[in-house]
Length: 397
Image (tube, rainbow, N blue to C red; front, side):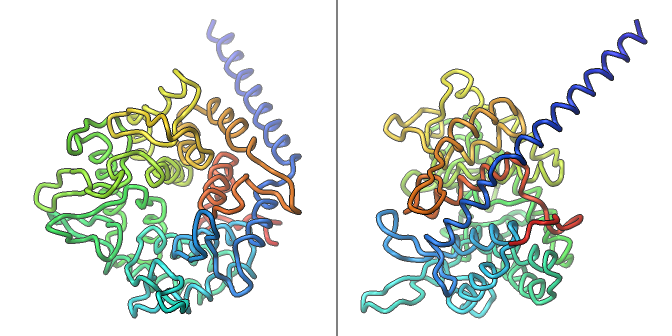
């Protein structure tokens, strides 16, 4: 009996190995949609001088630090150094003008018609994504200047975007969010524990690993606490407020603040990336505990783009490919079969090949085009931690 069991186990392992090899061969034999859609994106959205434009009708031609950060991350992951360098140059010249190495979040046309920085307030997600992209660039292209720039941004994040409550550090939404009316304002979708682990290695003088721990504490509190009148079902809200006195989570007064919507969907992706890179027990525990999306998929075989904090679906929100792309993180970790279905039927199904390019069906929305790309890249395990291990071969453009 024991020998037979061992043989069955060995056979099962062999079948799993062959299946994995066939899957890899199938993926590698297909056109590289990540590269194809990037080539279209950089033509559609990135100007010759490196500015990422948010065109009508989704925008009005403005540029955000977030858009610049997404371009830098994708460029370094794909090894596109010319685009990386010009987007970084534009960002440095036009947004990094505060004097503290951080970035004003909004650039556009002012009331007099001049193009300029419209807000010097920071957005912490863009700052940390830019810093991570610079660390990756220093590794990929063996350039110390990128690492020097990254360390400067990382120091600025710690100085201006980390608030303290009961002796513990918390990543807040921006330089404006650390002490608003005795509250600590959090955007859960800005929390990036995988990045803080990278920062800890290049900036050992600050408590980045403690920030990893408080980020997961915040996610648990904001996802499960009663915010205002709504009990939690394990969905992170778009925004959340922490009391600096007792650490309790409260609702945010802004529109749709308590909802799981077009900010919050990014949480699952960011947590899944920490699991992918670091095998984080905290990441696995958070996603396992937060089972609402998996139940919705199992019951209805669809996910709405917006839910109230108590899990009530907004019927008018409908389904959106970009929110599926963030939701996907939960499934990649906990339900790979469902993840494959979502990728095939909700993401890859949106691909269009027309007007001389390949896109995700949103050629006027930088936000959607980026997040669908990020979701597919996560599912294909293409988002390599370039700060560790060998740089992928043959990946440069």
